[in-house]
Image (cartoon, rainbow, N blue to C red; front, side, top):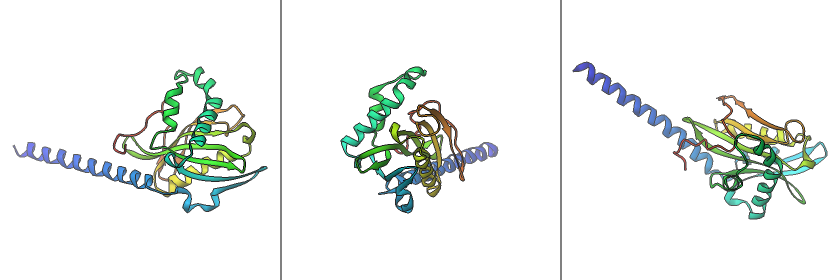
Length: 212
């Protein structure tokens, strides 16, 4: 009887510890999602002035973006990725991609020239397999600004933000910034807090369900 009681107590204690750990993870993600501007701590990264480019960079929740900017982001993603998606096992699903880009949890890095936006990254603070992550869904660039280091600069910003808020960074869907103009890579990024792994498909839902 004593052994059964002891094992029951151990199981209960383990469940309590696991719940506390998950609560801490969700609290960290929720705190990150309440930020006004994740780039506030990195003012030097709000501008990219090199390799013939001079762009400003802003970070906003999807709710803070103008409809025209969101439509531009979808059109650019479609232009860059539709053929590649069709060639993959996932296929191109226009309605799902549009919904993904407009999801309430979405954050955006937007690189702008005076004439308008030229590149963006869609990312989220989320929970994956019990861990807090900064999950990069997209990095998309207009063809005329590729191969100038801007895409890698946006990824560097995401790494800095992930490090500051002590979350892992996963980057599964990147186009036009890491090689030839038509490049498409599945990436895994390491932060000082651990190693993230490539996820099974671009645009998949990584959230553990506690932060919706």
